[in-house]
Image 1 (tube, one colour):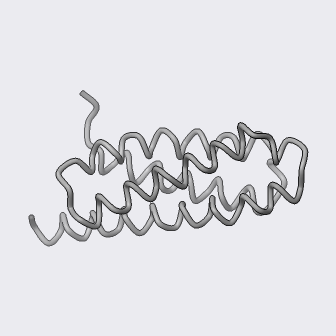
Image 2 (tube, one colour):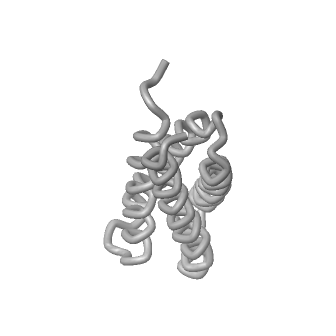
Image 3 (cartoon, one colour):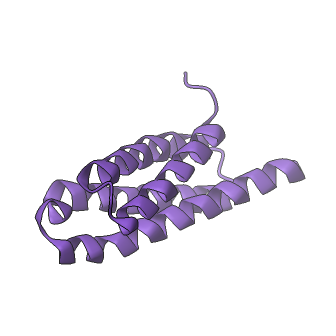
Length: 117
């Protein structure tokens, strides 16, 4: 593996970790806010995002040859999470911050997953 490729893997792993943290920190905020913020579907999507970001982070750090598979799924889930956070409350700064982290992660993972088959 080239040094440039290793640095790309590490950069994406870092972005995945930031997104994982953003979603984890948003869950208690949403539960406290109640209503649509605490809806099971919204909390479930945040938890899905946490899980896939963690998996991608791990595979990227290990330079797994299968990282493209988790990155592809991560991009889709992060994009869905970003859209949901914007939809639920476009004015809440915590939601905006999480949506931005999810969007960055989706973009980075799309780049790392390569062309679709």
